[in-house]
Image 1 (cartoon, one colour):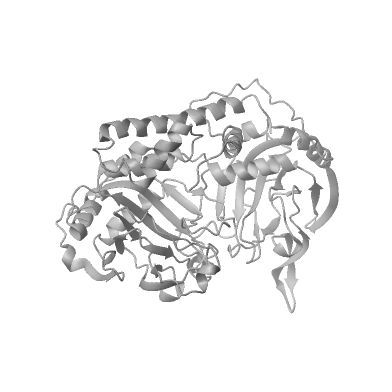
Image 2: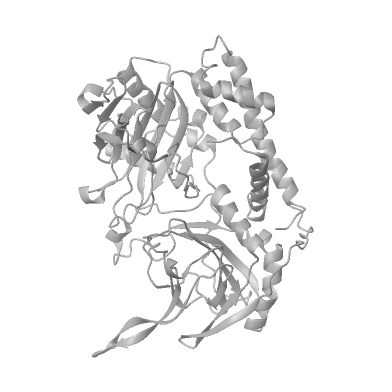
Length: 562
């Protein structure tokens, strides 16, 4: 990762505004009487470009320039970088179609609730609200809002909105700034019509479709059947939009079925994980569970595969516990550098909290078994979400001079070979006099091992060997779940790595940049060169700087509008 420049830091501070606008208030109180001021940029004139007869005596309106370019990009970037989303928690929704078991079928797979109290105070809404009220010939009250994301190959279906009620309308605002004609993603409205030769049966027929132009909005009755199509397969980013539900009758007796706010578990709650089975403290013979081992050409970097170190119930308990924390989204990275995995969705967990769970002693014992070393210490704890449209990369987890281990714990039940989702390990071949001149991405790799994602399986390996998580096949419409744990040989080395990775997110002084370079190069890996106690103080200081930066962003956000 590259150090953050002043320009990037400014962007980051700007993104922090959205954390307040959308309810990410960390120890900062919002003054309810303080309205945000109108921005000084020009706002294109809002216009009603289409009035649509969508069937069933319903009307929909297409509103262009509903939101400014600056506002749309701001919301889009904020959600990309700084927010947590509700997402798929099932294995494969195709297995549940027609069974009534999957209530999310037909909806966007990734959603995030808005803090509508704050959103209604923004200039974007204050500018749009009068036009909505003019169309509906009534004052409106906002009831609920959420951000939704669609990627290529997302499985959706036409469906009647679950937030259906009389005098309630849905307002969709597209945030994606550029959208070409052949990117697909249209919104289509449907009505039921009799089937030919079977007049007692009905089928859905499209009545109108709307292309997702940038900054466009669609207003429609919330009870109407609608489909938001996913983008085409060669669109590598996300179709992003806000869905807002408003009513012209706030006194309606119908109870709105909007979900309650979700609060992810705290670090303390995460730490309080204990197996409930009677034999949780059993002694495990790792030799009996070792399935296969691999080495690279140097015989120095190893990969071991273990099965059934945990019971089925234990794996399910741990997966359920992990899913209580929401993932953060990473934007698709188009850079050619092969320095990270490009995983789009990750739930990260506090290292010290993880070490208090019943899982850490099991994983530590596994590290000791494969290495004959006893001081292993985590530096990265995460749940990775990979879907069929994702494009993960070959990458190492550490530098050549670092001796670390990564453990990948496979958490999907019922995968079959045609679902794919393997992890492949590769080595870089010697230069052949041709491919090295292609530039970045022209290297030639050779596969040395591939691991099938069997439920409960663990792959443990020296993590400076290049590897890649393969997305599941297109017929698998759920998520490939893997718990990834990365450990250093000692607590000191863990602190070194965590500290320099956090420092990359700060605007560093010259002296701090030099210190960061020494940490990254391995010069301070020896406690004799930089005492562990001193390193702990530095780690705490950097952590506090990051918290202070967030606090500053929140305070500045109180007095500004987009």
